[in-house]
Image (cartoon, rainbow, N blue to C red; front, top):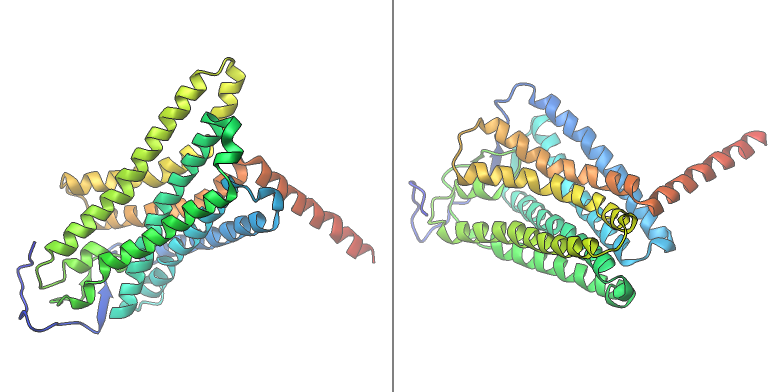
Length: 324
């Protein structure tokens, strides 16, 4: 794949930076970014609270909540890789991003969006072991093993995204206007003068890897869970087992359905308003990190109990202070 413009093979034309122009033609884009800013504040508060509760409550130091805490950390960094930059572009009205800083944003976003996918995958593994192998759960799914799994996925994502973007500084660019709301992989490649077949193939392969492989794994684990559930002798046990999966299935739907819709639109070359596409993509990246901790806080009894005990403790302490 080669762009129509070309640069001499022995020189590199590297701009000082890029200009973010996506959503610039959308009416009231500043109000939309204000909405995303509110979403980001909620995301930070909820995920920091969830991480703090899991860290300080020793009863939650089990594999499931190690995975939940990991997802909360990923959510926090993923949303931080996008929203502060959008505030600078659309509210402060400074849409210039220095070249190296653009690559840093590109790296952090794709590293943590891949970790988001893998983290949701890890939670399906936890549910599979809990329901299909309940008698061996404590020996198979230990804290140490969960730490190894999570650590391996972090190392893999960190390294593979470095590999994906390490050739970007060697590209020549014929334009500096990025038609997106952040330093996105494909829109940056489309500005290059060189043959970008190598980078394009890597991006396509990794996008498939980060979506198809985790989704396939999740599908297989839930097939196993359904088989185990239907083998249970009474309806109460079946309901109880399936109820423990509701929060995870909600996360799967919130994260993967928007991505699959966008990929189908791109793959089948449907025509849509570019602004609608960018709004859809931004929401699909920022709503899951906001909703994930809320779902786990509301659906998980241990976390609900911990929040309740903290609130009641505060309420019981304040009257004593007022009495003095």
